[in-house]
Length: 253
Image (cartoon, helix red, strand yellow):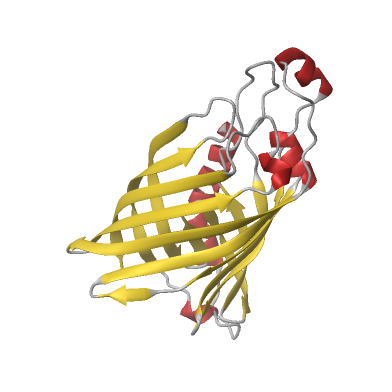
C-alpha cells in the first residue's frame, strides 16, 4: 500500500511539470487545457473486501476527475496523454489499487499491485469509451485490461452516466491474490487452489448533481460479476463485488 501511495504522490507532483513540457503541435495538443478543468473534492468510498474477513470498508478519500494539460485524473486512474488517437489520446496510466491484504488465517501477505500501462479515453458522438491495459510491476507480475462504455443522459441539471464493460485479469494476477499454495493450505486448513485468468462483466451508474455555485454532488455505483476462476477460490465468499461513492467536489472550468 505504501508503494502505491508513493507512486500516486509522485505522479501528482510530476503533473505540473509534464503539463508545462507539453508543446502545442499539429497532433491536436493545442486543445489541452493549461489549467485544471474538472472536479476535485472528497468523498466516502464503500469498498467491499471479498476475502476471508468479509468486511466492507467506508473510507474518506480524495475525489479527482479532471484534466490539466496532458495530465488527467479519473477517480482511481491517473496518467499522461501523449499522441493524438481518434477522439482522444494514447495515454500512459497508473491505477491505485488496494487489493492486497495482510497475513492472516495461515495465509501469506499479498502486497497491493502497482498497475502501470497504456490506454485511451475516446469521447465520441455515440458515448465515451475507456480502454486500458495494465501490468502489475509488484509481486503478481500479472496483467489487467478493461473496456468500458459510458453514455450521458441529462435530466434537467442532473447528468446521469450509465456504464457497461468487461474486465480481464491474467492467471498470474488472479493466482497471486486468490490462489492458495500447498503451504498455505496446510497452515490454514483451506483447500489448495490455483486461480486461472478471468473475464468479469461490469455495470455501473454515475450521477452529477449541482448543489450550489460550482459545487457538485457526485454519486457512483458499480457492480462486478466474478468469473468462476476467481469465485471458486476458498478466499472468495461471493460472486459479486460492489463499489459505491458519494463525493462533494468543486468544479473548475
